[in-house]
Image (cartoon, rainbow, N blue to C red):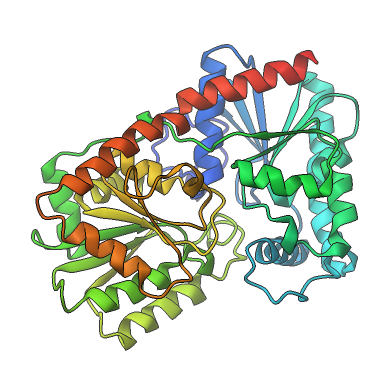
Amino acid sequence: MLDEANRSSDSLEGLREGIDYRFSPGGVTRMVYPLIRRLLKKKVLSEAHWVALNPHGPRTLRLGGMTLHNVSIDESRMEGYGAVKEAIWGRIHEIDATDTHDDLFWTEAFSEYAYYNRVTAELIRKLDEEHDFDVFYIHDFQQLPIGHMVGGLKPKVFRWHIPFDASVIPEQWRALLTTYLDSYDVVIVSTRKYVDSLTALQPKGTLLTLYPYVDPDDYSRPDATRVAALCSQLGIAPKDEIALIVGRMDPIKGQDFAIAALARLAKKYPRLKLVLVGNGSFSGSAGGLGMSKSGKWRTHLELMVKTAKLDGRVIFTGHLLQDDLDCLYERCRFALVPSVKEGFGLVAVESWLHGKPVIVTKAAGIAEIIRDGVNGLLFDPEVPGELARKMTLLLNDRSGPLRARLAKNGRTLAKKVSLDAAEKAEGDMLRKVVES
């Protein structure tokens, strides 16, 4: 997102990240942009156009061979769109009552959600008339209807980034979801488990598992001076032991499990501190769409800290630029992915790239490729005390053989979810779709 002074610019050339502009937080952006950049460089793509909801950005923005087109809808319609998005998110992640939104697709709010998708689809059709695209690649659940609305015979690919469990989808939703899914030639999810569940809706297109990915080149190994300076700024002493969580302020991310685990361990490990990095998603941030509950969740977590008498033991950093985040990965003893439900969990990969072990919830998609005790530690968030017990294993590993083994094997596993692996898998998929 561009800052106010540079909002009229049509290029990021010469602008500085964190000063003139910032990328919105969120795993999808961190995945899609490096992939497009790589596929353009390797000539798999000759040109790319990225259409996204961003009422605060310039109408268009050029980044090398990619043009970003920002969609804006009236503020009066945003509330309905946001309500539907949050309702779908809540049902998929099982954080709403089972019958809360069964009639969602027949509400007035859904008309605003459909309106946003229609506006986006019409822009895509207009751009197609100008540029004659070879394929449409639609990302994430809030934009699922676009493929149906775009129409036409050109191939369409849809990637569902959040978990998929057909058993939590209301019967009233299934017919419309199936209609939308049937608009795509390929439907991509992040794990084999999600593919198995997706078959319950019997979509017509090919179902494909492609692991999410990171670009190792986006991560640095900062020197000790930079790490020490940031830690001093955050109140982290040289002898402190740090457990790190990176994720937006959202109940689904399970920061409360980590605070509860710290409360169990605080007396035995007086130098242990928990560092929570993140604010809301772009949709939820004040500079984004402003539709999140992140503020309320952070307030709840802060109350937990106070009640457990952990003041000074839990550090909320807010959103950090990547250079600062790299410093915390370098400084931490281990990272945590304690989510109640997680589409995948790329924080684990980031931790491995920094040579640090990670403790991952069994509810995360990435748990599918983690072997407990080999390349990571797994815990069940529904079992009281299990996270604390896994943390104890790493805290007691003073000479470091367990941490070293987990980090080494994790780094090897990270190659499966790197940009290099994605370049081949996504490139092959796109070529096959276009040629079929």
